[in-house]
Length: 436
Image 1: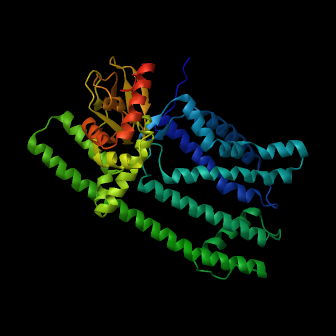
Image 2: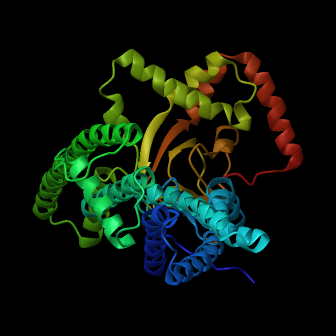
Image 3: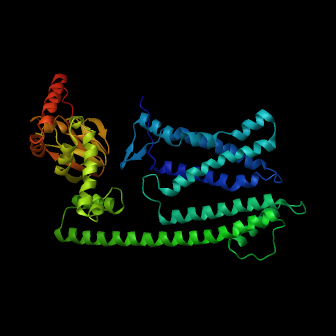
């Protein structure tokens, strides 16, 4: 029975991720204070930690079943999903989830020692950092989400600094723990803000050095927060303005020519794809470079892709460079057919960006090809119908090499022609014509 693969952008998976995020935030804010020796760990916090341990254990199993994004498409093959998780986050998640404190408590019966092992759970903050960079579907987080995360990091920093102050200036026992913690948080805020009312002062050199560090950090933190928020809002406004202008011009053009709604939707989808940065706009980058440098970059990219094709393994560097200069770049929409089964092939393709599916003439999927793949190379050797269809799954950028360009280059390199004839004979012996 085939196991169901979960998609990271599904609604319930996003809700689950937010619960996991809240768990990481709980660890970040609670553990530093619970490590203080004069604070008695409440029973309810232990219950919360047990519940979070169970939740993060389930989370590990969920990640083994969750597809991941690659080249604009979700990889759903169970073996690849498991391998990807093991190679990326599994070790960190396992270490952060395992109840080391409970294990130490059982083995040593030392509650104080076990308390310090709860620090390992702080590794879960790495997931918060990951969440800060991008959402499940690969898009950058929206502005409000990034501002919320900045506020979280400010609060976390305040709590950690206050915790350090309580370590250096421990309570004398004359007041309750809540008052001492609130006072430490108060000192942290006024010190970071460089206000420093003077009602709470360091008592020894170590606490004075710590205060100097906090004051300097406060100056940097203030500039960092204000600068980041201003930069995010400015950049968001620029991008939104650019999108609005381009979309307005596009809408005017479509209305003027009265194009059908299905075609309009495809055009809008393509423009959103480009404007939101889901593909590399090579032309926009390369057009800003000098001609010689631009040609060198394209030559390098294409030569490296040619080397990966079995057909060109014996080709000389000069031949590869000539073939690279003869390739042309094209773009394809999702669902667009690049190669039709039954057509006489006259070109091969190198996939620069995106994902394509290889289909039988009946429409059954044989394979998925991703960035840095090549297909259709047999069209350069044989005048015969294609045996498979290749269709774009995502937006795709490809390099195309035509048979006439290949034949013209071949005439200038007779040594490669001899090795090519041997390659053709081997392919004929194997009767392996499964490539499109």
